[in-house]
Image 1 (spheres, chains in turn brown, yellow):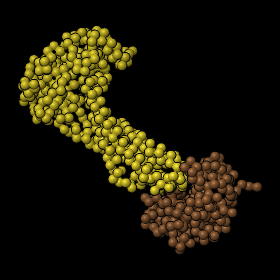
Image 2 (image 1 turned 45 degrees about the horizontal axis):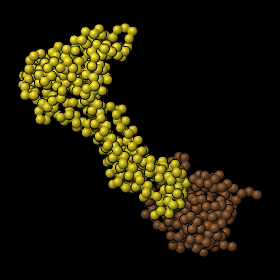
Image 3 (image 1 turned 60 degrees about the vertical axis):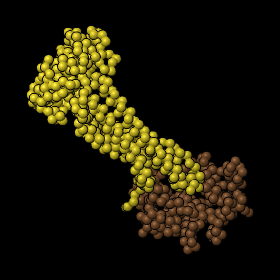
Image 4 (image 1 turned 45 degrees about the vertical axis):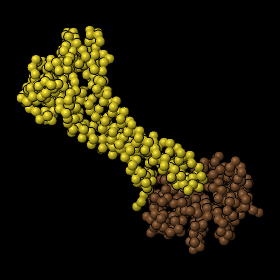
Length: 221
Length: 377
């Protein structure tokens, strides 16, 4: 049997010398190309879980395996984030001093790629997001929905295997929320990428083919 | 395609977001490098002119008193040196710095009228002085500053001297100087029977020996024949004499302090910048930037500050040097020449200052946990 794309094995995460337990033993497998929603109330540990799946943090015990290799041990976290992961955040996290085209390129600066390739790819991704007339606009000149589309283009810049979206519609109205989810699902289908969305919105979670519910640091049955 | 983002372009945008702070930081490093270019350039030009003083006259060795900042030797020792087999000529001289007017000071030399060093001068007007006479000659630039011509008088230490010639010399130290008979200089300096140094011209280099070895041999002969004296090759004397060493020390000391202040400015700016951009560093790490990339970005910003400050500092320093060379108080002592090597050295110091100042902030930025940095607001 081949290894799954991602596998969480008895993940535990505690803070403040064990006084706060964010994750209390989480196990699951995610296959390549899956669309998984992770939901739960505030403080349930869903963002902590996403950070570990994205290689931003390491568990206190247990491990995350990427194609059977342990993150932080066999797989270098920086390399993993750079090559395999595209992050999308609730607050967009665009850099205010860079225009849309530059914000997408900044993700590619860490890779040794020619600058004309970088800018062409960034422009193509922004066009795909319907932002061809916003290339030189700065984040403060864009609407919330446009900012999130720039952030999605940025997440796709390094052609990752996995898209991790942390409350991607949390700062958007219902129309923009629906549009963003439509874009994310379209990307997954066209590119065959794995999409993991953390959300507290039940209708978004319910629309995903697979739904993992987390409460008090554990997966609900 | 517009808006290509390069690593250095990103660094510049980061610096430019806080324009005032960046400009003030640039001001600090500019001041440091400007001081370095002007002061060290001044002292080195001074050394170069000192070297020209010897080479233009054909002096091979300067003989001074051992272990004394202000050398004073018996004039009678000159005969012993002149009698040595490798010595062609040995002339005594007195050197001093005097106030000619409240605004103008100049180097004053006392030379015997038959000194071979007078042969290196080209007279623009008038002619040589005579021993035993209250006469003197002026370098052309000094004569211009004082608005004096042959036939005028110049008062030194309360004694009037007749100007008998105006000359053009091979060094700014001669060009802006007063030269008078040695005996008259001994009188006004209260140094009867004493001299500051002997300048020695050697006989032609014999076959089978290099010039350097020949000079070393002559040095040993002089020091063996006349104890308590130091015989230095002219090149070493130019670099090692007390006045030049003092000029070098003051220049390096002052510019080091200014540079240190500039480095502190960059370090403070970069530390503040890293602190303010903690959240952004978290975003970059989430986007796949490695610790090394964060270090490289911060060091690029610090180096850009150092490099830019260095470039501006070179222009400012050069301007100051030219200004000093144009002033009557300083222009007679040194010419405003800056070697390309000194400019490259200044730029390298500026870049190294940026790197040194950015090292700790870069290390701090690289150590930030991506998750903690992302949470930071």
